[in-house]
Image 1 (cartoon, one colour):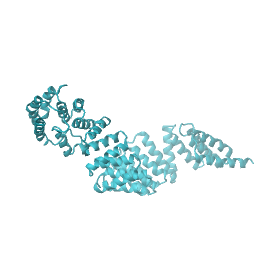
Image 2: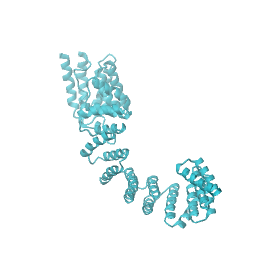
Image 3: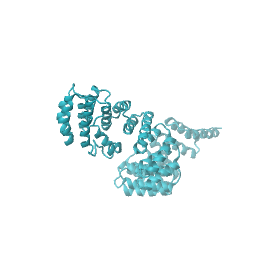
Length: 460
């Protein structure tokens, strides 16, 4: 009994000097575990692992106790790194597991995770029920990004009676990283018993609920988090995505608009907001969201801006499209040639739809001259000629497009439409069959059946 008391006193002396250190192998603030790992209380607990738990510790001989007291403790007080050499000499196969554990701790504090893991494992090999070694091994593995490997020592720590908020929280994180959502949810539930206000553990529980499609539970958890942390952009973003999954776009819009008003909406958030507004036919709001996204993006991602423009054009929002074209050209000064051509084609579509077809066809012919295999430009040019009763030119453009992979079906349908206008129904049926062979579509099939009726009526 006296020996155990001496051990407690011995290690307490070391801990009292080390506990003042503010951090223990800290993580960058951008890391997803930074708020857990860099928590001062968590660091103090890790520092405290230099101490001694008399109920679950490997024993030391009197000689080992004396060596530790006289040689190791003074160095730990001064600078733990200075204790490395002497600890390396003491951590022999026949020595107490406590030396391996302490050596692992020094390496861990110095962020040498490879050696820390090695020596924690050595301590466990000597003393399998060494709870603190299991716990610190788990922490070192998680700190090293080895989440899958960290699960076993975390669960072993719990089994040995060492489960606390951080152990359960990191276990939930490790399970979540492996796609084991039900297990992660259970672990986070236990973590929240110890630390109900912990933001990351609550957020982890939300992610588990989302991953198991338990959206109502996820939203209930999020409501609490949002009330306590209204300035956390991740919460509003996550809430919006859950509403989208539940097919509640209006509520998703509300979440994203709040995020926008907080000034924390990313270009991706704003593009999504624009899409949602377009789906609800609120074109002016969509334009505002898209324009803000383009400004925030600074023109570095023109593909997303052009996609937004394409959506607006596809909905026939000509005025909004023109304004967005202006915004894209103002912010994306150096468009790549392919992006420039795409923008030209979108502008041509709007021009033809609003009575400025002559301007559009000049641009389209220039595009075709530069790239005779631009199927989209060929189809647009054919549309212009068909609309302006230049049938031969239209047929030529559609025929050329029908020979380009990916444009065959649309080109055949457009040829058929020209023939229907000329009441050449039988020939139109042939082209529609070709279109269906190239790409089967329900709407084209319905059109084909109507034209077949007209063809039969004509024959009779």
